Length: 189
Image (cartoon, rainbow, N blue to C red; front, top):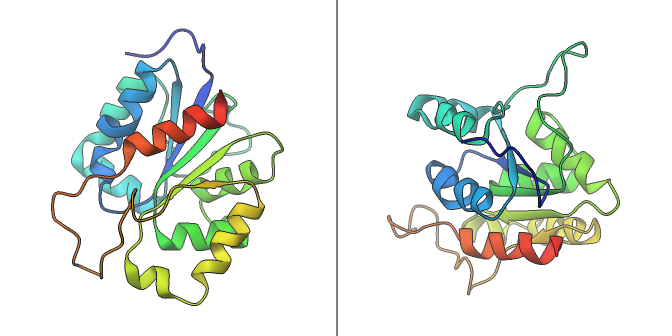
């Protein structure tokens, strides 16, 4: 069910291998398509392995009409995704957030996000899927400061994503997809 027209533009979805990744299609991609977005999905290498194994990779490609990416293209290959209007990094692991804040682009997903942060006027929304131990790391506040300074909108806080100790998350806790979609609407309207 590929979108023929892109009245809202292209939403670049970048996802890391974190809990809730399996709901990326139903929680973010399908609702974004229903809101008029064309969706281009890029995954970290581990997230790519997870979604290939579950069958979600092919479902995402069929749904969006675009290839899912988890590796760079050759310089002679055409660009597989159209230019992006807004980026969403969700779920973003603590590793992805730290590398993004430091400008480390060591995979295709981080390359896209790092370039997006350096592109004036291109909204970037980041949902850090972290736990309380990640948040207590002494570098974490600095990472968030760097992202805010770069203009990223970070989805966080106890009303959106209460932090739990490692391995203490409620088993059926869903990612805050509605808050992420609201942030996309706010950033692009």
